[in-house]
Image (cartoon, rainbow, N blue to C red):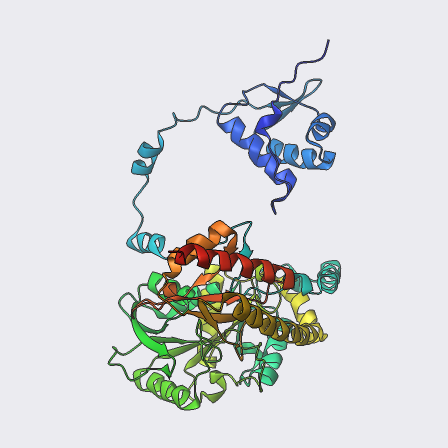
Length: 487
C-alpha cells in the first residue's frame, strides 16, 4: 500500500523566475507554515532526496533549507525517525490585523515623517523605461568574477577586519586618480570616503550636518533621494527653481546649511549649470558658512563635446562635498558610492561612517580597485558611451515616429534618459496608469516638483533597453496615449 504523504506540496510553491534562491524560498515557506501551525509539532518531513524529487529541485536545495531550519530550532533530527517539526514554545494568540495595527508602538516624529516620503518603486513584468538604469548584460561579469575570486584567495588581513571604515586604501587611491583625470576633482585619497550607495552618502551628510530646523536649498524639480535624506534629518527645504533658462539662485530664501545641486547633468531636466552660477553658489556658501553638496549625476555620459569639470575643482574655500556613484556605470546592486570631503571634515566623516556602518564589504572594494586600476572600468565606460549614444538616437527617432501626435522628444547631450513634453493637456499620472496596464513603465515629470506648479510630461530611460524592447515599449506607450486621449 502506498505510504501516505504528510506534507502537502501545494503549500511549497516555488517561483523559479524569482531572484530569491530556491533553498531560501523553501526555507521561508516551511518556516511560515511551522509558525502558523499548518505543520504541527512532531510532524515528520520527507527525506531530502524524496522532497527534492517531488519538487523537481536538487537535493542540495532541500538540504540547505532543512539545515537552516535545524540550526534555528524549527526542525529536529531524531535518530531512526528522520526530520520532524520541533515543538516550539507557545506563541501568543494572534490578534486580528486591525488589532495588531492599533497595538503597534507609535513611531517617532522622524519615523512618521519617513513613512510619508516617496520611494523608488519597481514593478515586475513591465518594459521599464527607467531613468538612470544601465545595460546590465553589457557589463564584463567574467572579468569581475575573476577579480573577486582572486581577492578572496589572497586571504589578506586588510580585507577581513573592521578598521578601514573610510574605504580600502587602494580603492580610495583609484577613485582619486580617476576623478582628477576625468572630472577635474582636486583631492588626495585621504579625502575619499567610500559608502554603501549614493543614498547612504546623502543620509550620512544629513545626519552629520543638519540640526532640526536647518534650511537646505534643493533644486525644483529635483532629486527625491536628497529631499528624503535631508527632510528625514530634520531639515527645512527651500527651493532652487530650475527651468528652461537654468537655475534661479536670486530668490529670497533663508540662509542655507546645505545647498544640494546636480550641476553636470541636472536631475531631471538634463541641464548643465553655467560657470557664473557655479561661482555665485560658491560665494553664497562661503558667505553663509554653508556646504554645497555636488551630486555628479550622470556626468560620465556626455555625447557631444568634453565632459564639464566638476564644481569641486573650482572650490578654493573647502565648501563642496562631492558625491559620486558606480551604480550607473557598473550595475545597481553593487551599492558603492563615494564622497570627496574637504580635509577639515575627513575625521568627522570617518567617525560617522564607523557609527552608522554605511560602508560596503572590503573584499568588494578590493576587487573594484583592481577593476579600475587595471583599466577595465575605463574600457567599459568607453563601450557604454558608444552604446548609449546609439540607443539615445534610435530611441528619439522611434519616439518621434510613433508618438508624434502626443509627445515632443529631443535628443540629449548627456545622461541616460530623455524628456518628453505633451503636445496637448494630459495628466501624466493618468497616462502612467494606462501605460502600466499595457505593460510599460516610465517616470512622471510631475512627481519631481515639490514647490512650483508641477509640469506634466515624462522621463524615459533608454540605456537599459535593447532595440526590440524599445520598439515593443514604444508601441505599448502609443496604445496608452490612445487610451487616455480617445474621445
